[in-house]
Length: 349
Ligand SMILES: [Ca+2]
Ligand SMILES: [Ca+2]
Ligand SMILES: [Ca+2]
Image 1 (cartoon, protein in one colour):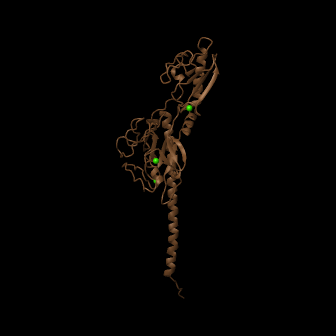
Image 2 (cartoon, helix red, strand yellow):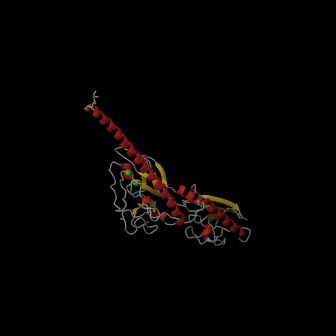
Image 3 (cartoon, helix red, strand yellow):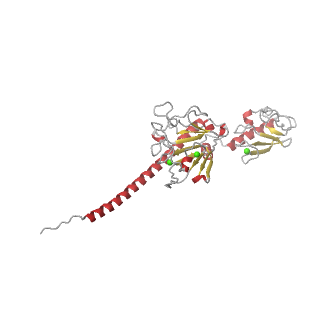
């Protein structure tokens, strides 16, 4: 008996193809989602590596590196290295502020200066990381305890809210679409994206504001940038923990103690008066009957640096009585009467 072998009918065949097609499409979309996740996570890991390399650079040099000039091609002088010179960063994109201390500079991560590989200097999509830093933070900080400062704002979606308003440096991946990113080898810049993509454009408009928000497929404002930043509170805390910097409070207290001791040792049974010669260019000498002024370091026989706070300002000196003085630092903001002021009173005679 001949067994009847029946082939697939056209309808059955097309059903198989449709179902197979659906399964295949699903597999592809799952596959591309996995690939995208892998690229995002690789980008984030690289940002962490860059941050560690920056911390290592900062702990040795007491400053941030300048960005590398973004549009250099491979083999050009300075490719992958910080722009020259510290405090100037010539050739990077200058983002001017109202005063020199507000300026920022933007380029790409100087992977060679940071002793990273070329691969460490590109994101999970093979493009350079954008790097922006406050310009004056590329010069060494004023003292061991002055610490770092920042003036870059990180904003949330549509710039509704400030997430962090005093950031020193930003390390930005332009994500899958690559809008605004620089490419390795050629140094060419990808286009900045459609004008409707507000939040993406905010990360490409060369100012001190950046957006951090979740990955969004919203066709009116798609967003895939991956942003990482260093803020001074974290940075200074880590550097104090690493014994690279002295904490400002311990430095101020040491300075105050030296002044109290010196005032106690001046001959006679009264503490010296303050220096009222000039608040800008004081001469360090006591002036009779001046009770409130600047620490008279010459009269106290101490180095002028002892009479200055970590931010380079002279410590204020108040002669409360013949035996007691009050010392005040106006803190990191160099402004009298704000929350960061530090003050201490002691009877020294
Ligand atoms: Ca993007
Ligand atoms: Ca911006
Ligand atoms: Ca203050």
